[in-house]
Length: 217
Figure 1 (cartoon, rainbow, N blue to C red):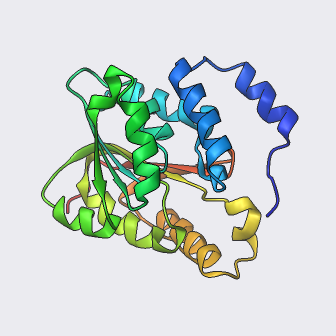
Figure 2 (figure 1 turned 60 degrees about the vertical axis):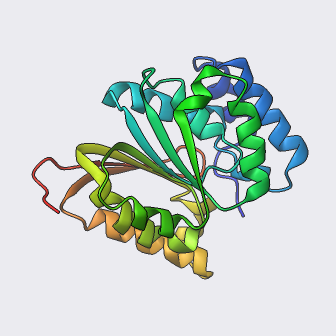
């Protein structure tokens, strides 16, 4: 798959953004060293964007679909108040174990509650709860389903952030099930009159969605 942003520009952007806590740099390095799928890591630029969105929205409760090794969750947790909470869904036991080890090293980690198993099952169990912000970065084939399940859980005015919505350019000519699912998700968001949204060309595409305050579910 094609890389959308060249490495020199990415390094420049990183060096001109506010630094994140050292434990996140260690988690990034550990993931890149020990996981063959380390490209799934959200990284400091997207992490910084998530952290700012948490601050700007004054979020207290966050829902995450796709914990991986915990980088995005821990980044968002640093912006939450002491009584803030993140519920994060993840089905990979090894990734969960890595994430929990790093969470245990910082007081922000106690704000994160991991729900192991398929995310769609967890979302069904959460159907009566409400969140201020949600982040989707999991198996791409289920993106349309995640969107449909997560949006009703957001409070009016709440934010939804979706990763990989450009999918290394594959959305321009989708062929695989993942390509087609992300393209379908992008159409769904664009045609949803209950939200305002923008698809940003950050890393592999990040869509930021705001649930309109007039919507009713």
